[in-house]
Length: 225
Ligand code: CDP
Ligand code: CDP
Image (tube, rainbow, N blue to C red; front, side, top):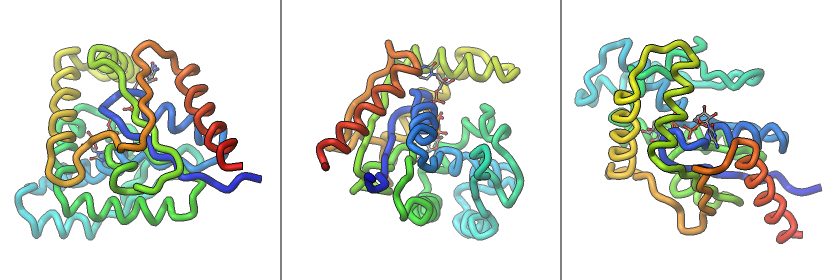
């Protein structure tokens, strides 16, 4: 019986991280922590309360009021008990989330919770700083990429299929803006960990991407036997 692993998946926006993470977690019987959903839930709360991001005391107070959890049955994110899974995926949250995630105060609170949730292993986390900051000693680190145009197409299809009225230009601008802010912020910028495996899935289907992930897990287990 192999010991439970901690798997870190990082990468740019809409590259396939969460799809890969969710599918791998299901196959391995692991839990999945969508850290992007946590930053999105914080953002939704700050938007609802119209908190000024420059008002440090107001941000602190807002963070004190927030409880974030994942519903075990379907992994929906719960903000103070409310299922906000659908609301956090819209462009309104997407347009502000990188500004919120650049605040050290917010990152500290989220990273602390993520470490607690993943402490026992048997877990897959996806985000921007998992392999570099949250679990720098993770057993397996994947860095997922795909060409920008491919990522734009994929996210656009997702939003349109959900019935949201969005233009391709808007989605494109949002992905580019978030990638820029996420990789240039002072605290925990997005970068590939030195020991991560690069998975470019521009020309890979979902099934192939997941198979590639499974192969890497198998290789790791074999190497450790
Ligand atoms: O799904 P998508 O790739 O568009 O984004 P996400 O994974 O839901 O993350 C939303 C935003 O949260 C990112 O653009 C980052 O600004 C922030 N984030 C972060 O800073 N650190 C993480 N570990 C995860 C997300
Ligand atoms: O989590 P992240 O934002 O990195 O990406 P995602 O939400 O997993 O993937 C964005 C969209 O691309 C989803 O609708 C996926 O189903 C789709 N996708 C795809 O069609 N083919 C792939 N090889 C990877 C993702």
